[in-house]
Length: 334
Image (cartoon, rainbow, N blue to C red; front, side):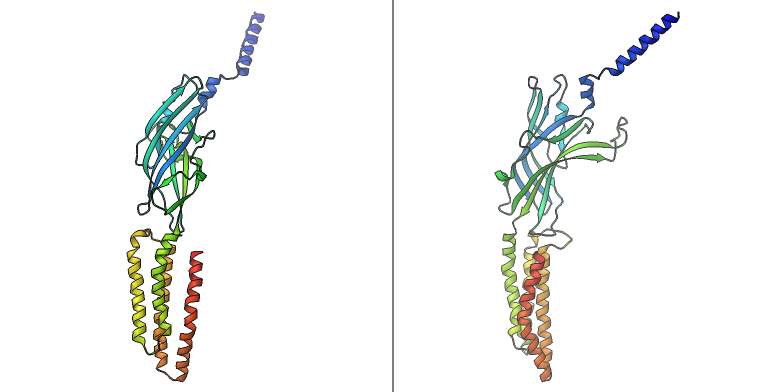
């Protein structure tokens, strides 16, 4: 009896040891790992809508899964969405290659995306346009999206093959891809999801800069004329206040009218841009010319000492006005 009990105990211990040392099957390991989707896009056209902070883009996209289990269904990989876009996903080709063991799906997207603009340095601003992709149903424990490192996952900047439909206003300065996880602070009412839902995302960023030369040239000539009119008051005799006042008032009204004229082409933002600062600089120097006209006129009616002070102010203003304006303008631009 004792021998039978000992035999049973030894048999049980052997079974436990064998089970503990047996590695899990490759299939069970694979089931625990998320599907790695190698992703890329190829951009054809791009158009920026500055007032609405949107950009419209036409591009091809693809997703590939390597080393697949041929018995598994990979259609869930193509259940994707481009975050905040106004377009449905169009699939043009889907391939399940059992010999080479890969799954491949591709499509085309013509969509409008929002972007958060930063116009503090307008017209020297640089904007980041981002296309983000994630799965509609499966979180990062099931599917992760990464850039296609075996191929060109995005246009090459050196190829210069993206058509920007805004004339020569913009230039693409960088094209990069990053991976991220986005946590939704909800389980979308799914009892099987514990806590918050976290999804894998891949982000394609287009860095675009504005060509400031055209805008600055359009601003420079009218504002230069306005400043010259204001500058002429320093060469008008003190007692000719009517003529001097007419020049400064005309300059001020012309500057205001010009700013109103081009307001539609300027960003609608609550903070000051570089263009706003240039206009306010011009206004302040017109006010300086107005103030100098009034002060020197009043001094010219006084005694000889007051007249000498008036002449001195007028003389020094002739070089203080342009030099200080150029210095302050360079500080604003730089």
